[in-house]
Structure formats: structure tokens, C-alpha cells
Image (cartoon, rainbow, N blue to C red; front, side, top):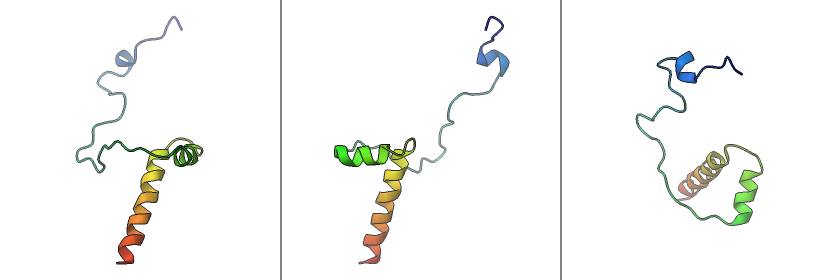
Length: 67
């Protein structure tokens, strides 16, 4: 541990974290969900927000087909 160097020193010019989206494909919203819904999606671990989005997209496509 004594020989450890900072990330920026070991990898100069390399950025940490996610890069910014050139054209964001999603909108940031605040949404209130029932605890049961939230627990269901979070029970499967990381990516629960994406799973909620996928489920809502399926519902929208299904509704559009019935019009």
C-alpha cells in the first residue's frame, strides 16, 4: 500500500467515471412509485431503473398496437 500511486499519476489523461452523453437518450424525471413496485424491481439488483424503463416501454408499445 505504501507504493500505491494516485490514479491520475498512473494513467495520465484517462478520465474516471462515465463519459457525458453526446445526445442523451433519456430524460431525468422524479417519479413516485409504490413500495411494492420498487421492492420488486430492486430485488433483482443493479439496473432496476432500466428494468422499469423496459417494462414501461413494453406497456406503451402494447397500448399503441391496440389503438
